[in-house]
Amino acid sequence: MKNQKGFTLIELMIVVAIIAILAAIALPAYQDYTARAQASEALTATGGTRADIAVSVAENDAFPAAGDPVIAATALLDGKYFAAGGATLAPDTGVISVVFDDGALNGQTMTITPALSANGDQISGWTCAGLTKASHIPSGCR
Image 1 (cartoon, rainbow, N blue to C red):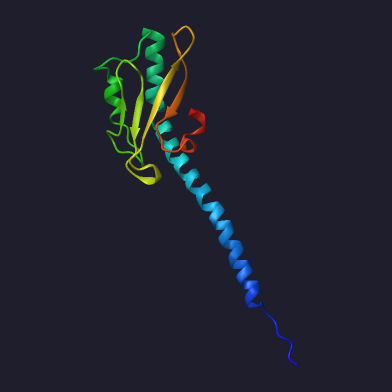
Image 2 (cartoon, one colour; image 1 turned 60 degrees about the vertical axis):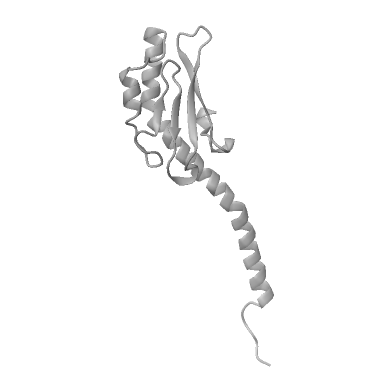
C-alpha cells in the first residue's frame, strides 16, 4: 500500500470556510476605517480655517462676517476626497461644511461646528456631524 501525502478535500474546505469568515468580519471594519480616514482629511484641511475662526472670536468676540477673507479662503480648500469649493464657511456662525465628492463618503456633507467657552470669548472645541454613520466621524471631533 502506498503512503498518500497531502490534504483531504474536507481539510481544504475547512480552511476556505475559515478564511471566508475572517474576510466577512474584516471587510466592514476596513471600510469604516477608510471612511474615517477620509473624514479626517476634511478635518485636517480645515485646520487653518478653524485657527482663523478662533483668532476672530478671541480678538473680535465674533465669528467672521460675510465678506471676510477667511470665508473666501475656505472655498479654495482642496482635498483628495473633496474638490475646491466643497468646503464652505457660514458667516457669523463659524460652521464649516465639507461636501465629499469621492471615496467612501461620496455625496455626504460633514459639518464642523465650533463650541464656545462658558463666557463666549474663545472656542473650546469643535464637533463634527452630518455623516451617515457616526462611526465615520473622526475621534478628534466627536
